[in-house]
Image (cartoon, rainbow, N blue to C red; front, side, top):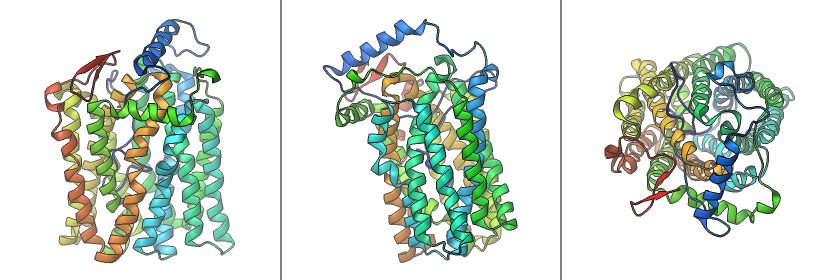
Length: 489
């Protein structure tokens, strides 16, 4: 399960995440997307050479090496984190405002909403793989800076068109496409930059703080957005998000990283480097199963993600404020999930946490279409669905992201993340179009049932895998291969 642009849907896509907050210091970081090198001579030689370089330079002083102890004392990380926190809050407003704009103001059909959702995530399918290979050649922080600027400018076009009285659905499609491309570059860079900001033993804590902030934004953002949309028109609420991207842009300008770029003579042809990232991911049998569950779950989750606004605002007749409140209360589950993950992992084991979380995550969407049987309980039932989904998505994502970041060499982080996202998010634009068409053809509620059952079946990849007997996931030096054996690096 891998979460996409937003943590939503009936409960959220399974994501690309981070680590749990922490009451002491957390162990598991973020989802799974992982590993195998392809290379210039031998894949194994390339990995070993990279690790030898890392070992030789590990003790060398860096200009911005992180201080010992908690990241609460690391001013550099806190600068980046504060910008991210505000932009995530703003993004939650837009995640609510754009569907409201399309459904209530422009009277979009199920198919049009499907096209809009597809436009928002199409970039992961179209440019996801080359973006990862390219990002591994450049400074990731610089990519994030430019992506924030592009997103701020693109979003600002919507209120301008609204003021001119010229806003149409195709304008929103174009903005969604531009935002999607910028988000691909930003997210892949963001997920790959953490090891260059903090020490390796702080990666889990850093990911936990970033993920917890995202959940806090999901907690307050939709409720504030729902209130805001009752006060000002949707296009103008979007301006707030544009402003938060500019704040993130400024924070990144003042952030320092310790990233060292590979010399240009070490660059392979782009297609070969893309292949290296894909092989790194799909040679690992545990990661293959995680990617299977994540991608299938994300595909079927698009039924809810695409149709939830129409279902809630038209079919159930909820107000915009109530709709925003559902997301906010549901996000409490994500916040608690981030806090609880290290304790759950300690109790049942890192490996077992993955199938346990996926089963519960698969059950959550079944509650959404059931709401039509008791419409008077629509809000509490939707809150429970979103709460359970958010909680278990965080448990799943934190565990698997930590695993993949832990085992992936630095030089492959961008391609590893892009390869995973290409698969697990690349299915989403296809799902959005399929379920948008189905919603218009057979109706919203039957389509939601199809999506819910599909998400439950998606858990079979990890539920039938070796996770139950492993207890803990392998160390970076031990890789489970496709034949069931192990490879030491």
